Image 1 (cartoon, rainbow, N blue to C red):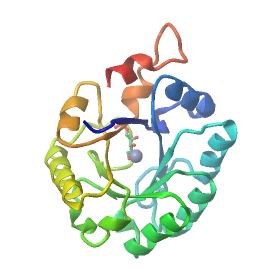
Image 2: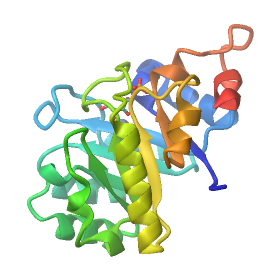
Image 3: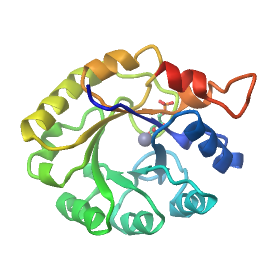
Image 4: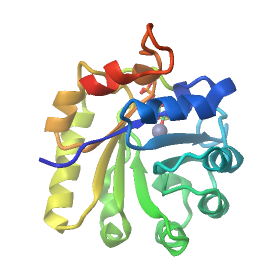
Amino acid sequence: TPDYLIAPSILSADFARLGEEVDDVLASGADIVHFDVMDNHYVPNLTIGPMVCEALRRHGVTAPIDAHLMVKPVDRLIGDFIDAGASYVTFHPEASEHIDRSLQLIRDGGCKTGLVFNPATPLTFLDHVMDKVDMILLMSVNPGFGGQSFLPGTLDKLREARRRIDASGRDIRLEIDGGVKVENIAEIARAGADTFVAGSAVFKARNPDDPHRYDSVIERF
Ligand code: DX5
Ligand code: ZN
């Protein structure tokens, strides 16, 4: 069995107390911090940037930070996120003029790379860069907002991505993002995902007896 990683998306956290929220999900068993960056251009919403990533590091967060860049153009922000302490920097191929160059920029900065696939973006973008990718992130919703429903067609795409990874023989994580819930995570895992982003499912499941704990949902995952 692969080792499964849970990556809460802080998009659904309480931004007024973000440091505590991140501490709380990590103390409750989360593995990675999923950090959604939206620019009101590539996607129709605006979130947080490298200053907030750096602030989390200064706050003392040592867990991997998975910066999901939904921005266009991407290259300048790649450098900013490297400097801000990101661990993974992932981007959408449609948002980069030169996919190979963007991947190389991330690796040269000492971070792990990832390509992100919207529901209608074909996996063929992987064809010539499989050796430069550390993570494949499949969107199971259209990017821009938390709280949307998992698109079921993503399960076949996960199986196809898993076949590509296995055929490559490389150590590449397969991450899924959008509409992941306790109710569907087992099926998603069976389709081949090993890294699970969950925003609303995690942050809406605060333990009523201890508002600093999210154990129940993270354990059920
Ligand atoms: C959507 C973001 C997701 C989102 C997931 O563009 O990339 O990370 O926050 O949220 P849920 O888990 O609520 O679908
Ligand atoms: Zn995301």
